Image (cartoon, rainbow, N blue to C red; front, side, top):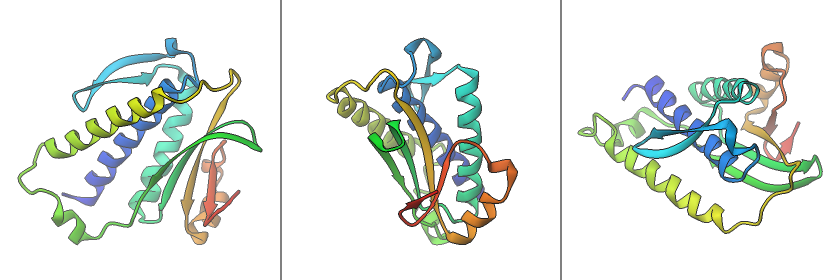
Length: 174
């Protein structure tokens, strides 16, 4: 599988997980989400333009960082104020080599096994989130990227990437 296709598939999966968490944790009213079928699973995807614009920017950056092999982690933070984080959802990554792509099932041209893994993950996550306490009404969220220092400097100086998200080097958020 081509690494660019791999990045596209990965980015789509992250979009699904971000939307599903925002819906299940009621960060936004349920009316702004529309039920769709993705990975042969019912998923709730935002139809609210301001949220969609933010998510598009996040996913564009994820795609670029992933393509360049410098994305190590993405955190979705649910917080009331900057010092009061209620929940953190972490997506860890490792840099894939061409050999990793060879390890993927060659006979899974239509990504059936991959879809099955994502479907299981989504159902498992939904079950685990059901038992959590409700969040405060005025909860907010932010997405943080973990990357290299060089990448951080390059992106932090580019006005195209100056929107309300975080990029970190190691454990330090900026």
